[in-house]
Each structure stands twice: as structure tokens, then as C-alpha cells.
Amino acid sequence: MVEPRAELTIESYYRSFSAGSILYYAGSPARDLFLIRDGRVRLLKRARGIERTTGLFGAGDLVGEEALLPGAHRWATAEAIEPVTALVIESDTFRALTRKRPDVGEGAMQQLVRRLRRAEEQIENASLPDPTIRVVNTLLHALEDDEHNVISLSPLELSTRTGLDLDGVQAVVGQLRERGYLDVGDQTITIDDPGALRELHELLALKEDVRHGLSCR
Image (cartoon, rainbow, N blue to C red; front, top):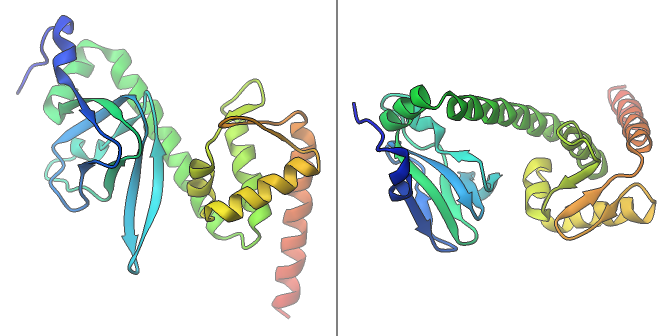
């Protein structure tokens, strides 16, 4: 088993990727994990001939965790959408590192739990035909991880999490802003009254239930 080098030489594990470069391709053997220090990475998956963004990750996020499974292959392609610096380590080295640094393993576990929650959110959104309720649903999920009602969400990330295209996301966010539910800044969304947003979600959900009930008659 490969032991990690001394902590003083951890910089030797970092690699830089230019915007548009590929960290790994779908279907390739999964040998390394990528811990992002700077920049953003998106995961791309091709389905029915269309390539879609299935995840967006930034500083502090772990990408390529399937490398922890023996003989695993990449399930998606990872692309740097801006200049990226990432800690790139083999799975055996990562396991050894977590034994010496339990906080690293704890952080990785927390990320995987959040990723499972995001997957459940995307499945839930896929069952909602109305774009507005998809966006509201995602914003309410994002609020669960924030104490100050200020959500750091780029249009691309909101598009990924709702399953809507960028134009659709921007149209819904614009409508919600005009109606006073939120304020939009540079890569941030501020929700002054979460209770009002939850009431809107309940109203939209009720409309969907009524619409579904009528369509089943």
C-alpha cells in the first residue's frame, strides 16, 4: 500500500487543469480521487444522445469517489469549467491519509451524504412538471444548509439541480424576484422571508395535486 508523503510535501499532489480540460472520461478506470482547491468542475453524462450536466463542484468538494471501489470505472466525465487546482491522490493513498487525518475522512463522508441528498432532490424535481415548483423546491433544500438565508448558487448549478435549462431557470428566478420572494446578487440568492417561500411551495404543490387528480379522472 502506498503511504502518503509527509504533510509538508502535500503540494506535490496538486495538479492544475485549464478551463475546458477533462479530468477523466466516463468509462475509464477509476484510480484517483480529486479534492478541488480552486475552480469548478462539472460532471457530464450522455443519455439518449444528449450530454447533460449532472453535478457541479467547487472548492472543498471531492470528485471521483468511485475510485474507492475496487475495479470501478468512471460513471461520468469530469470537465473543468474554469481553471482548477485539485489534490489528486490514488485511492490507497487516500485511505492511508484518512487513517492519519480522521478529519479528512469525516469531511469526505459529509460530502457523500450531501451528494445523496442532492440525488434525492433531483429525483423529486424530475417528478414535478412545473418549472416554478422545481426552482422553489431546490431553493428550500439549499436553505437547509444555510443559517443566513443567503444561498450561493450559480445559474448553472441551479439548472443542474432542477433539471431545467438555463433560460428556464433564469425566467423563474426573475419572476420570483419580481414578486418579492428573493433578491439576486452575483452568484448569490437571498431569501428574506423563507416562510413566504414555503407557503408558495405548498400552494404550488396543492395545484399540482389538483391538476393530477383531474387528469386521472
